[in-house]
Image (tube, rainbow, N blue to C red; front, side, top):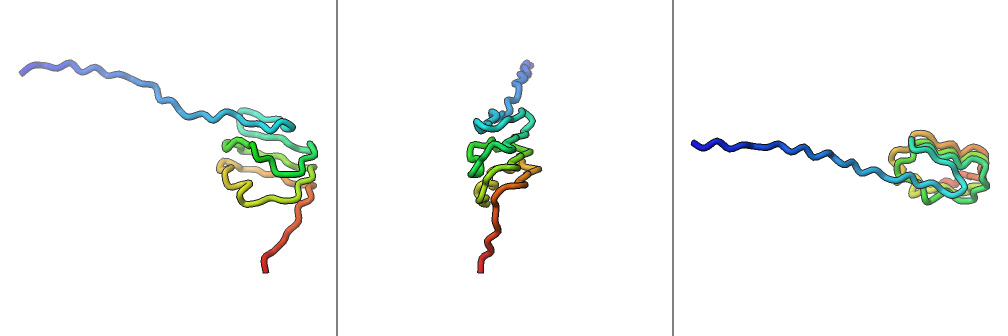
Amino acid sequence: MEETEIETFLVPAVAKVEPVVCPGECSCTEEGAVDCAGVDLMDFPSELSESTRILSLQNNRIELLTVEDLARLQQLETLNLQNNRLTTQGKN
């Protein structure tokens, strides 16, 4: 019986790393913190990275927040919306 030499090749795993996307008026960290406090936003920022963990939106003029705005932010742990113009409208 003939011996066969088996070589093992180690291929490094390449994890998909999403680049940090930061709205122009905000400051962001690589750890997923986005600070948009007091930058006079009227709308929820749409260009947020999916890896956003902390989102500070206090002291703006945001009037509307939808489920769709938050749905793609699966890593979001903290959301600060203090001092905006949000209102609650219930369905009848």
